[in-house]
Length: 404
Image (tube, rainbow, N blue to C red):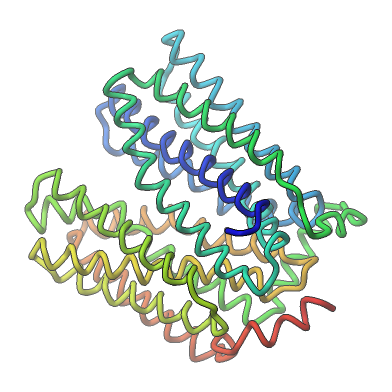
């Protein structure tokens, strides 16, 4: 955090993620008030994250084809405009359910298009040697936003209603734009502006990721983890009510326990120098999947609380290293494509939620989570065995490669 431009980027990232989480919370509340349908509430979350699967790779191509700072700032501006439109609809009492679905998809789309540029810009500011610490600090900020955002949204709804909540979102986005504009890049982020054929860059990026075995394995593990681990957070309230038999306040502590574990993991990673990124990637993923299996067997609240905390620590290792590896492995001109490919893996989360929900309806939530953990462990083991290069020293092996 001693780099002033990285501090600005970090602050703007937190200022973007917090209103994004607030928006998801408030939109869910609006839909619940209008429809009293939990199913339609789930659509808000799915539509908000689904664009990662559709637009993430395009966002990576944008990061390789245009000035990354400009792309990042532009996406924030469009999210601000979307929030302003929503605020106007609420003030005029014109809001309908279909408005929330469209707006959730639009904000998710701009977030997806800007993600790779923001991550690439992070690497441009700190370089290979400190990128892992930077990603850990970035995850720390994201986890903090996920804890603070819903609380702020709830307080604003209680004391001022959803209109005031959206005014708060608009204010945070304005501050995010002003903060991000002040960022001064210390690396040449315009080196790839010569080739601006987006379609050609997109095809080249896909071919590049396919041809990089280690990078492809990294993305595949991300797909596995988002299909199996990510849905458990969405289904934790069901576990709390139907299996652990606890009231809503204890359910909230259970969800917070995951966030606390993720914060601890991110802080530890941010404070140390790491060379074997792939090993921590595999270890963190394995720890999270094993804890998910144990959690699915637990019927004791206190024990579940501890297991979820450890799961959060493992998940921090997975989240940090998936982004670090996608920035360390490729050469500079393909870093955006690499991050775009990773967003495809992250975009598997909504698919995992739907599949887990279907299985849970058929055989119960505990069994559904148990199946997720077993499938995840098997797939992770196979990928690790088939691609042993994932465990090598990336700090040593890729510095020379990225400089050529």
